[in-house]
Image (cartoon, helix red, strand yellow):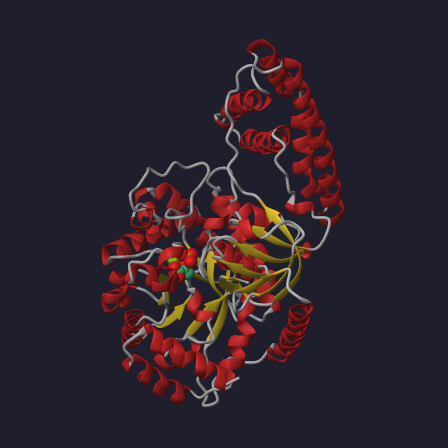
Length: 571
Ligand code: PEP
Ligand code: MG
């Protein structure tokens, strides 16, 4: 049995597919046989060609002509005599091993294409990199798993999954994820919930303990996974799966209902999204709005900074898709663990405390203004709320608002319309901001508490670090006191306060948050209906008493135990 952190609920039963994500190390080898290297290269090119052709056909049938074009471009690279011909020349003339020659030629072409001032050409650089990676893996005999063309239903086992893995994989064939690293708030965990795929993260050694085709059963809520279990265990999990599916069906009845306590306190249950494509999950789960649109994915899935029009289209799509329900769009939150392929962040001792998010945007106002222009232009298509991440001082907030005014002024001069109703808010994810929330509340329309970071900064515990994850606890009294302070200060100034960190969707946390007076809860769409069921079943007055009791407790452990049994008894 392996035990990790339950990241996305549901029961998965099936065969494992281990995805190796080790970096490929390419070295120059001496004493090579030129004929052998040429043969290795041509074999690898052949296998790659047939793989890409298969994927292209599959994508064309399932997703359409346009989506399959990327693979047509990959085939063009493979068939380009200048590219592969140049690699062959290097092998022959410089006696290089195939992978080394391929790497040299790839780097040369990539730097030529990347330096061109032309979006189309820059994209070709990405194609060359992708194709080259595939061929190199075949030259070296490293297994290539194409997640977009899985043959059978599988449980993916990986050290970690990249955003491009999760974006390209064939979701219908993936029964679940198991990863070695990560916590409840790591991006793989958040993504698994968005995709509604059961997952356990932080298993430490899943990739070394599990082999391809091992039979696995796991529970994405408890974080327990069994490798090649006996029949009794398999039967137990089949029953658990049935019960889970039944419960999921019963949640359907809550669609279209209000999120309101028995004594009449209504709250807003919104969803967190990463891309406009996630709207489907939001609508399916009856979200009452978008409480957090993490725009960094628009930047991370791009080959260069996305231009104003591209951003405008994405924001407009979300605003229109939500049909006048409120949409909180967070300005760029990059840096820390989120990097960009096309922007060099300087080496830092403490990237989480460094040049990131609003700090970078206030420094690179060109990048910030492009985003704000796109946001204001899109504002006429729905109910937009703009939110700044990582604010740690009043000065930062005032400067960010000043830039919004500049952008509006520019748009007005250019005769471009925007809505006057846009709300401006900020995340509370740095303790400094929580402590001066009485001051900040005077300058915004709303707060949204980002517990994922607030816990890490309050407790000085890296949210990605496995070894100290026992200290990363939402029930730490320090965190709960800060949450109470922020809600009280917001209400004293007459503004609303939400939460978009993962705690907002946690059934053990929601009763406390209700009691403290939180107005909006934004979570992975998959959690919305369960949260509504809970809210509809309790009284606000009882939750007030509960939260008062909780705030008297002195350890995270006591609070956690109390809340776990509270939830159990209220099922
Ligand atoms: C947070 O910090 O709580 C949050 C919602 O932001 P992210 O998880 O994107 O850092
Ligand atoms: Mg954050």
